Length: 136
Ligand SMILES: CC(C)(COP(=O)(O)OP(=O)(O)OC[C@H]1O[C@@H](n2cnc3c(N)ncnc32)[C@H](O)[C@@H]1OP(=O)(O)O)[C@@H](O)C(=O)NCCC(=O)NCCS
Image 1: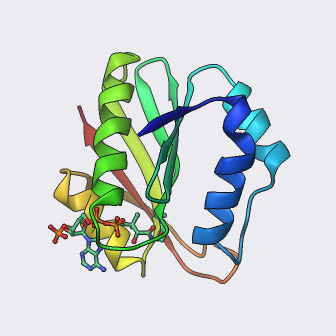
Image 2: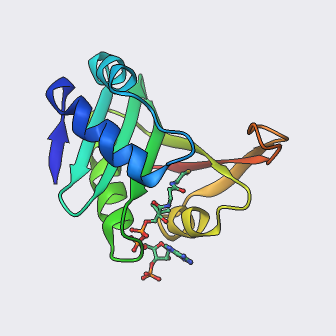
């Protein structure tokens, strides 16, 4: 696992593009996100990334993904992310996930995340977003 800073913005963008081909974020987006206070980036050498932001005592998972699925990459990234959030003083973690994204919802539930809300037609394709949260 590699902590990502601005020097890794290009790798973060490449890994993100491989996981989310329909909505890649460019190098400039990652460079600016990674420069923000409270933002933590992490890369899994097997092909995976996580980005989270801690503001005061709340953390938000900005993005998480694995190129190769079901090999424990998502779990490993989330473990590192939650530990980091705790160490930055977070007491609660939030995220949004597409209602139909069963693999991600299962992963979050396995860590104890619970549904905290629903944002109807949140995504461009009209899909609802489920808001999930975890008390650390
Ligand atoms: C969601 C995602 C990050 C999971 O990563 P992963 O490396 O494939 O998941 P892991 O192998 O670490 O699985 C951990 C647990 O998550 C759950 N899980 C993961 N994929 C699952 C699937 N397809 N079906 C059901 N449960 C699943 C299981 O509980 C699993 O534990 P188990 O393998 O012991 O049963 C991955 O599917 C992904 O990158 N998806 C595309 C990007 C995305 O949707 N990101 C989230 C946006 S909110």
